[in-house]
Amino acid sequence: MKDFQGKVAVVTGGASGLGRAMAQRFAREGMRLVLADVQQDALDRTVAEFAAAGHTAIGVRCDVSKADQVDALRDAALKRFGKVHVVCNNAGVAPGGLAWESTVADWEWCLGVNVYGVIHGIRSFVPAILAHGEEGHIVNTASVAGLISPPGMAIYCVSKHAVVTLTECLHHDLASKSDKVKASVLCPAYVPTAIADSERNRPADLRNPERIRSEEEIAREELLRKAVSSGRITAEQVGDRVFEAIRDERFYILPHQKIKGAIETRMQDILLERSPTDTSKPPPRVAA
Ligand SMILES: NC(=O)c1ccc[n+]([C@@H]2O[C@H](COP(=O)([O-])OP(=O)(O)OC[C@H]3O[C@@H](n4cnc5c(N)ncnc54)[C@H](O)[C@@H]3O)[C@@H](O)[C@H]2O)c1
Image (cartoon, rainbow, N blue to C red; front, side):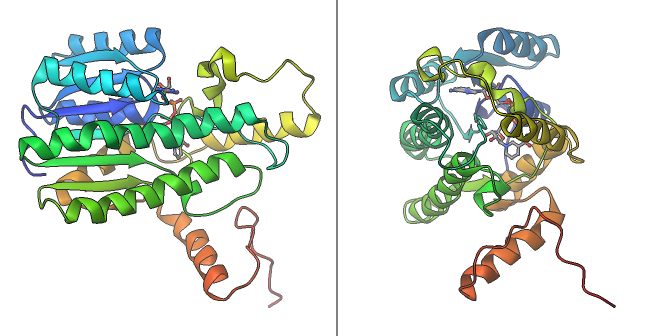
């Protein structure tokens, strides 16, 4: 996409972290915004901030795991602005845990938001973008966890690997129908946001029964929290990378260059048919 002034961007998970930062960059480029989020108070605050800064933004409460709510989001966006050009399917949650310990509720919650949220975004919005015939772009937020498979993150990795392949398939499908509508997949490593507190938005019907958590679970959660908060690249920098990728029509967005070694190791594991390397551990020292 080359022309952004007055164009319309929809960002899910737009009330916090990466989504909010993408929206801020889009607003600076003169775009009009539809911010969608399941957390009403944060959404209201964010929309008020955008309005106070002189930007045009509306907020729509939407649980992206629900098909009818994403359809309603599209309808609200079209009703207010007539067209949509950019859609960032970004809302996400991040439960951790060993593969066999995760509950059915954990799987349903995470796959509902992280995978079905993106599926619904594509299903609801792509036909509306193709129909108006102008330039458009879909950005799906996956993660580096969609390109490697570290321990203790099975559900999250399953969800993000799904988003990577879904977006690669979308890229091919779009190319068969249009030269004006493109796709990108965003794969960051750790960025300081509220993702380690994503339990705050878990719906009541998908909560686990109260139970005493093991010391190992608590330690794992603490590790994730520390890793997220230690991220060296800010949400604002990721927002900039996303904008540049849309402008320059780049598919893969990997803001953290250093993680490419781990991705390469996984690819080599596959090609050499060897067991998966734990890339979260430092490589063994080789004696000089
Ligand atoms: N922060 C990181 O380290 C990191 C790294 C890689 C990928 N990601 C991905 O980035 C995306 C954004 O996360 P973030 O880091 O900004 O976290 P965040 O918690 O700051 O923001 C996520 C937003 O999604 C919203 N949300 C949660 N469930 C929702 C639902 N069902 N429907 C609509 N909105 C919902 C939350 O209310 C929140 O505003 C996620 O997909 C996440 O998996 C984050």
